[in-house]
Image (cartoon, rainbow over all chains, first blue to last red):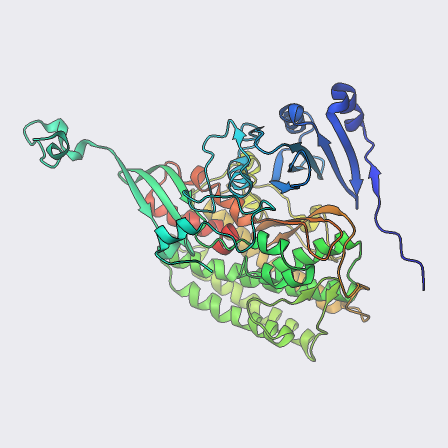
Length: 175
Length: 383
């Protein structure tokens, strides 16, 4: 049998930006890596707003592409929050990640990028992560009175808010 | 008489207490409204005809696509993505397949890349035709709808001949294409190009200098380039504001870097410019089609992809230029046969956020024009 081809490797991301950030924040920059040609950094949630503001104003990442989260129920810090940023002047895309515990709040990125409004509302709707300073944090895709956050791993694919369905739709179950 | 019933009787003696003095009115538009392109509810705060503020209520078409993705294998999820932006299903499939290919670190062979480009550009034209027809219909021009749908039929015929489906095509697979081109595919595409260019002139004859069209669209829903970037707006809406940015040029995928085409841009960022940009984009798509169809190389159409797709642990964000803007996929793999997390970054969802900025201070009738010009598909907004 031929040997298995080597898979893509996680490489350290070395650049002026990362050296600067590491000098300024030290261990606040938990990881800076490159995977399949894409750069990302993991930062401590306490310095997240500073990093984001720096990214926007000093490094000119003027376009916030996406904000999303991933749930890892077995970890102590259960949630990854991912900011996908793009810079028009540099034609570069990076990801800034942070890790938080269940119930921990994150400062809103709305003052930095107005596009964060709906994106953060969706993360709140799907994961129940609260963004402090958001102008109107409420559910966006699910109805207002719904209980539960469907993209959490402990929310089964067939699970639903039976009470809401019975009261509002007048049927026994949506399944 | 209790306080609550008092209000039912208008006090005609004192003039300042009649309802005529109240200037603000809250009006509900949708979710069942013909111009909302699906089920979008917009709550308008009005002063007479003038819009003071809006709030969008979405989610009526929410099907939990991202949750479904976590519970299906990589290949099984492929047809689901077609159901998001159902007027541009081919683009959705392309974005998803490319993202998984990136996770697997494989690339589609050149022949597959060319077929993919041809299919996506046809799909871009078809999507813009739906936009043109419905947008013009919203504003009151009935004819373009029939013209656009008549000509779109020819594209759907090519899709049907190629993969058996017209709308939700599932045309591509992870690693390339599953179907070889049918006999006469190249001729059909070439024939379409020569057929379509004069039709495009016909659309323009109907609208570009039409006085009603120009009055209804010029200076309506203006977006400045800095607002576009701050709001994350992409696609033709961004380009109409004068930002020359297209992912096919900025970060080329497939074989776009070998093809010669231009990025049309607008000047004023109003509804009329967005119309011109989309028309110009269709011309560019024809240009891409003509080049790509001449160059289809021979060779395999599938890369070497294992039967059971199990990408190594890692995560990837990849995006393509869909007809409506940047369509991104963020996939986290835990090394199993199912993605750990699939996130779709839909262009319509983000673009719709700009509605409030665009219609503030405009008239109610302009809200209809602006919803049309944003070119949203609610299936993609709600997922």
